[in-house]
Length: 159
Image (cartoon, rainbow, N blue to C red; front, side):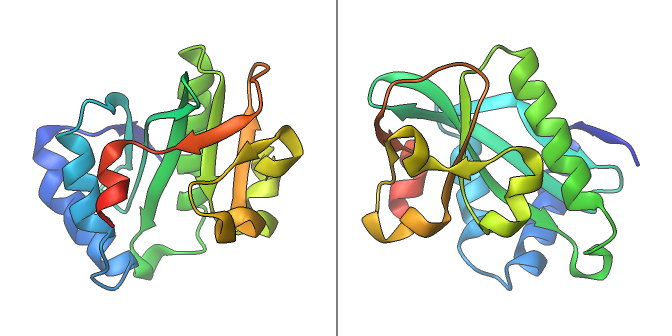
């Protein structure tokens, strides 16, 4: 399976796969808003060839320290549980580490993301924007980071 950077020709297909994966939730508009935001990092918007899946990391912060926020990640419903999501996460984490990013933060199922080295963010003293997220709020560190409050790229506040 080939994982590559998003191109302008992929935007409609990314929107489609995200709408299908999230049943027309707010995630597809979020990706569009992120793309227009200063926190967008083109090298960290990846697709599985054929746009069967998409993952993105955007600039986030722990207090004033730049880190990454992962998500949304989408896989076409007809191709879920086939390793596409796993390949996308491995690829975006590898790209983030190659860029010397300090950490990647996400909101998701700890049982799934533990296989990628994520741990509950509270173990590092990183607090979520919404306290109720704590049981699902996770971090993968590539370098030490100080404890503090995490904030996603600005478009996440529109949700």
